[in-house]
Image 1 (spheres, one colour):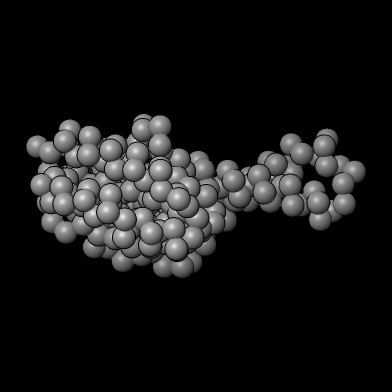
Image 2 (cartoon, rainbow, N blue to C red):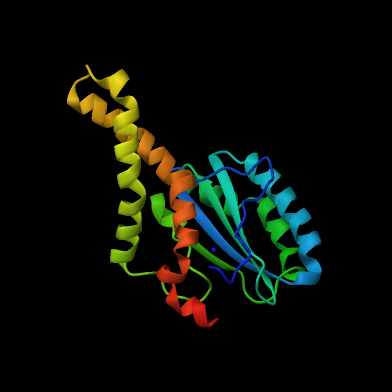
Length: 201
């Protein structure tokens, strides 16, 4: 999430799953007091179980930054469409769970919505999003080697296919691997460059 940070590690919960390239993602940033880490994680696991039972839920992924005076958790919760997300946000189970959140957190919880690959460019708290050209460059750095790799690997299978079908197979596999794990790893590795203001934090 830089060399100054504890690696932002995925939540090991079995309900965790990387977001896909479609749908809508709720990005939740929570700063958790260190004295409440254990209680917060137990609460979060219960919440993830509830999310897993919600109609239209696709998956979730948690990134942790444990380097500061408070721990920062960025949770990406993916839903099939906006209606599914709104149904979750208005559900009694979610509203009841939120009544406990204040006792774990230090400061306001931040929410934003993202679609597609945008969700992986989760910006650190109170910092502006990186410029478009940086996001585009990261995407190219991620996708170009994947296209070359899968074009080569698939040649024995797709060599006799029509060009459009071979390209579709290559593009599909490249998109899947770009979403996970390539883009999240690139986003974390290049974070000091994407968010240079973080260096002085």
